[in-house]
Image (cartoon, rainbow, N blue to C red; front, side, top):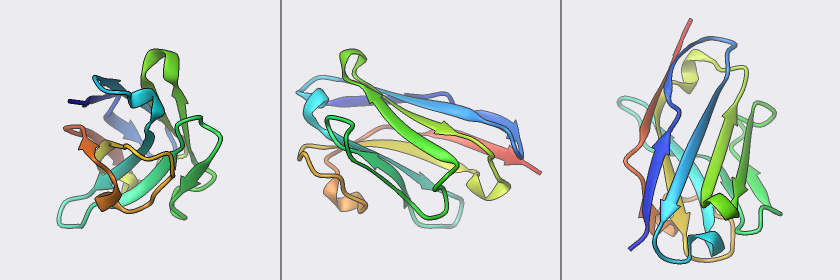
Length: 124
């Protein structure tokens, strides 16, 4: 069974930065595509960013392009989400997810494993 644990969330002022980490264990997680999603109160979970198993392909939601960067270190079984120029509307619980295929996907139902989430709060 693959387990995912997110860390790095917290409270930051608008314009600030945070780096989220997602460490995986179990299974062949180094070969999985990985994604980040977020869910704000009263809203549906939405796609943020995804990366292929090799790191050679990435996708971003339009709302975070140019501000967020997804990356991975397969030797450490860890995926990162560097978030810069944060806005109050980025406030949400951020979830890491693993997709057993090699392909980058933007929809949550394509992902097989999920972490518990980490809270990101951006104050104005």
